Length: 401
Image 1: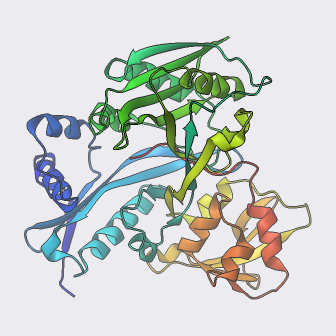
Image 2: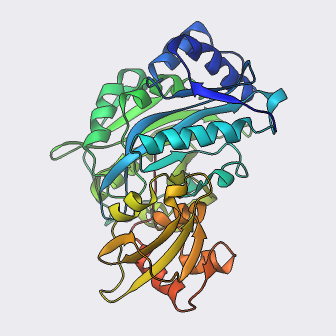
């Protein structure tokens, strides 16, 4: 394996790193306008480069906070911009960069890292696991009739998305982050928001829902025509503080003229869109896919931060292995009172990637054991772990980066 040098890049090296990343995605190099926008997305000290001795790979992150079961927010590193030059892949460059990044994050007190994986087979070996699952749906607008008991909602205000960034940022920050997996959106995320809108076929529109106490939800969408000629309204983002705002936004979307279907992707797995309609079959689930991948960087702190839901007498001792961050390896006793390191005998044994899958409640321990992801040392404990790690709402992030 080739020796690599990994270090934090200086600001004057960021354009080269950005061009390398775009090339790794088979995209043309960024224009001056693209780079001006990308520069505002770079948090100082968070962009890495790997050299041999030329720059052959890059990765970056920005700081945020992640909501965990029970409602607390913990420090999150949102990892993005990961790429290795095509003629230097599979030579250890990514491994060296991921090890450097995780060690740096641990030293800065970050508890969890998250990313969206371009390929599903890459990041498990670095301790990442599928932390949330999302679904996509399509609504036949001509057949869709809301049930009479669906709340009427409030007023909807439309703005071109280029003018709505500040209002959307304020609205998002004010919404309750009740679902595990939701994250804050720092200025580095919002700096890339206008640019992400240029990737879509039609002009983007922001719909702000006004309730009794102000803006309590929003949707962002565009309309295009598919090959068959149907006009499709694509919902790229929808957030609501409560059921009335959720219903009000969908009520509005159904009134947009010259639209045949409404498609919404990256939605919470348990979101009951189809139950809004008299005929639930007018809403088809068109896909289920992995969402945010998680990596517990500080296992003791992350385990202690979330809430557990088992009975008062229930507990389980898990043994965690982490080949990249040795301080995480060890045994932890988990109960309704919390989680802490312990010397007690292990009942379940798992690696840090599997623990990251279990952490937000998306996966059941008994199911993970059934496919060999968890070694069961005490046969009665997987179902106990199901109850302890289970959550009332499905985990969902809803913020792509």
